[in-house]
Image (cartoon, rainbow, N blue to C red; front, side, top):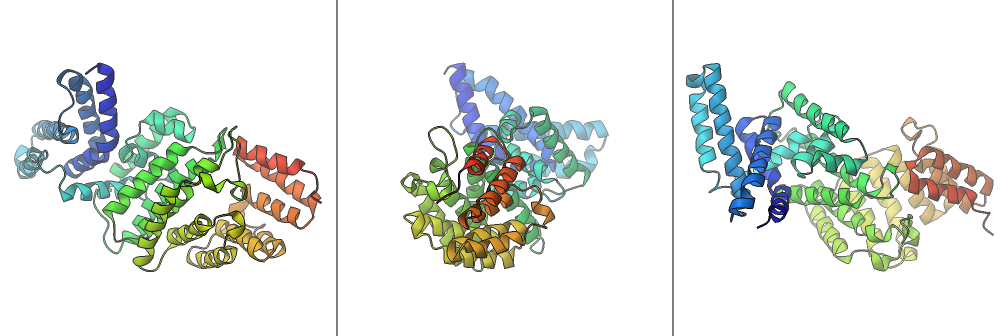
Length: 420
């Protein structure tokens, strides 16, 4: 095996196994930052040894065992240095026994529990949203700091600082690496789902930069969502989020033209929608519905399903979508939900009805710099024949957006002559 082949093998195994390795180490040393350092040590060892010895039959188990042996060595050194070996001896013996059995039980059920603990730790509410996203992609996605920086279009040192601050905060705040109590689970799960969907949305509609989308972020969020659904099969909202992402991701291939320019939903060639992702999304939605009352992600998935089931844009059941948005506005009220409801109401009952809802959002502070509000108003005003007002709204939307592809769409609409 060449050095290049070995390195590719190590990188592939790391992307798959890193979450399990870090999670197992975190259970052992009770420190996310230290667990990642030990896992990285095992990765370095693999890069050094595998080109010579070849890839082991159980590469994930090799990484786990190597990392845990290093953890034991570290714990021993710390105990001796502190002069408290007797005090921690019993705990250390238990941890050593765990490590010695690691290769045999690497695929046992507790590994799933470890990864689930890591999910809730990386997405802990004490961390800011950007810190949660970066730490989750690093620990559970196996992405490097450079890969995360490229995906979010921020400098690599910025991502490094976010990850370091997040790990330090978890330590300073004494955050335990454990599953939340049943009483705390809904709030903590909402944080986990929010981080995954934040990552997906940044890939689906990039907030800044020269590209309309960053599909690699969508793929990573989907992978994380599928893992979480496997770990928490009884949670309706987990399946709802997976369904929503699968259904939205099915359109990615049709959302840009040959030159990379955006293609809006009504103009997309639906033959380019990914039928496998649609099927998987509808199956996930069915699982969410079977588990009981759906929350915000399940309701959004039901809305996405209306689009997926429509053969053409004209076949879309806009009345059902408007009704679903009304329920969503009750379950999870927000100005953005209301703006989306305005679009659905306009499609179902006419642009004047939709504009009335959109106009009611003009005073919302949360939408003050949101380009979609003037864009929606511009579209509805244009449909009502109020061309001059519509052009001003699209020009305003172009000023607000930080995405160059989206700006080009808004400027083109602002320059469009009145429709007959």
